[in-house]
Length: 278
Ligand code: 5BU
Image 1: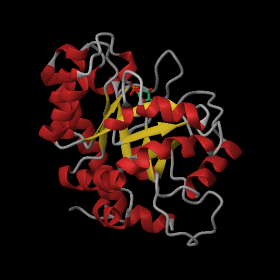
Image 2: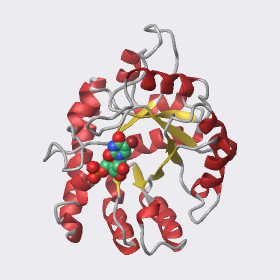
Image 3: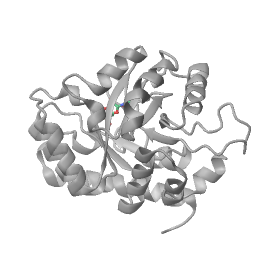
C-alpha cells in the first residue's frame, strides 16, 4: 500500500479523501505545484503578514504559532484569511494540543484565538490517548477541519519513537474521518499493517527541513527536501528559518528567492518519486 501511495499524484489522492481539509490541501498542492508549507515563526503581526504575502504564491500551506505574536489582535486572523484567499493556500495552526478532551475542546474553540474558526488543520500530541481526538473532533469535525497527530518529532533525543509512534498510528486509524495524517519524519502506512492490507492514505507533513545547515543550537535537525519527499516518502515539507532566517526576513527578494527554491526542490523530489515529469 505504501508503494502505491508513493506513486500516486496529489490529485489522485485528493479524489479519495473524504475529509474536506485534507482534500482541499491536496488539491491546492496540485493546483500550485507546491508541497511547501512555510512556518512563520515571528513575533510582530506586521512581519508575520508581510512574510506571508511574499511567500504566498509559492506555498500550499501556512503554518502558524499564533500565540507568539506579541501585538496579536483578531485583525491578524482577518488579514491571514484574506491572504489565504488572495494567494490560494490553506492554514495550519501548529497548536500541539495535549490535554484531556474537555480542555482541548475549549482551547480549540474558545479563548483569544478561536483556532477552530480559521485554521483548516491543527495538530495534537497523542500522549493523552484517544480522548484528545474525541475532544478536538467534537469541535472540528462539524466545521470540516482536519487533525494531524505528532507521531514523531524532528528534534534530537525525541521520545516519540517505537511503540509511542505505533500507538499514534493506531489512534489515527480509529478516527479516519478527522485524523488526516501525521507530523512525522517518514511514512507511517506500514506500521502495524501487512503490506497491501489497507486503503488508508494519511498525509505526512514534515518539519526539520533545511538545505543550508544541518540543525540549530537547540536540538533542531534538518534534512533536505529530497531526503524528506523522495527518500522518506513524506508529502509536505515544512520550512521556517530556511526561508526568512539569516537576516533574510528584512529583504523581500531574498525571502521570495528562498521560497521558490524550496518549492522547486520539493516539487522536483515529488516528480521523481511518482516517476513522471508533469
Ligand atoms: P524551522 O525554523 O524550519 O526550524 O521551524 C520549524 C517549525 O516546525 C517550528 O515552528 C517548529 O515549532 C515546528 N516543528 C519542528 O520543527 N519539529 C517538530 O518535530 C514539530 C514541529 Br512537531
